[in-house]
Length: 363
Image (tube, rainbow, N blue to C red; front, side):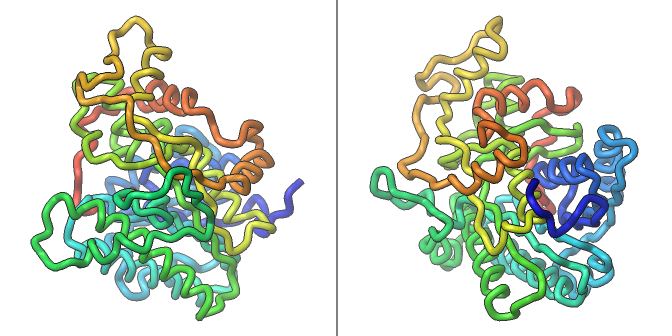
């Protein structure tokens, strides 16, 4: 059995707990006997995420706390008291192309959380949700089969993100990539310079799929898949996708869990990258999930092509080993099963209308 630094019964703080990944992390923790405290921005979000969590784990220990602005100085000081681990999952997913409105407050919020954590002796672990975009720039050509490892960094998005205005819509993905890259850079610089008493880990996920747990949950990238499955004409949302890898949300959550509690997971960047991503793959899986319906072929019908994928190779041996010891015999969940869960196990009341860009998005 793997040694843990935070045994069951410990308290974990999750930022943006109403978000897609964060809610699944909360479920995994509660299922294993941990107490969870999570931040949300509104009382409404606190209400529905509490209902969603407690419906699945009626005896679980869960509390949602309303924190409208995570970047406010000292806002986390009281929250981190008696906390054993912190999962910093919240991020601006609004696709706002203005870096001053996305990156600047995002970095400040992370800095506030790290500083608060250093003031509490109980904190043993701090895990940051990063992104594959902190390791690779998906808009820069790469040599075939280029290897992506825990030491890979995106060094080209930030200059484009901070170029002078105008901030057109095409800038949004550069801003998001830079947010993740700059956030993780700050995170590891803090570890090196501040030398906190707690251990830091980061997780770098790709395009995340899996069940959306409540009709009011935006669903992040899984919403795009569920929307397309529900209505084959909902192809417009895929237009901006450039993710080279896909990963199941539970696998993603389990890697965060390991970073929070496993004794031997220390100062690591865990790649949550299951397999290459191709837009046309979804229609092929949909055919297996519901063969009674008509699905587009691998042409340009409905904007879905059998193209995409990745020219990189991700070294995920460490992540696979961690998932296996957490009960995932195959390591990462197969693509078919991940998509099936997204399409069939999401809240039946969820609709694509819930997936609308908002300036206060935290997923």
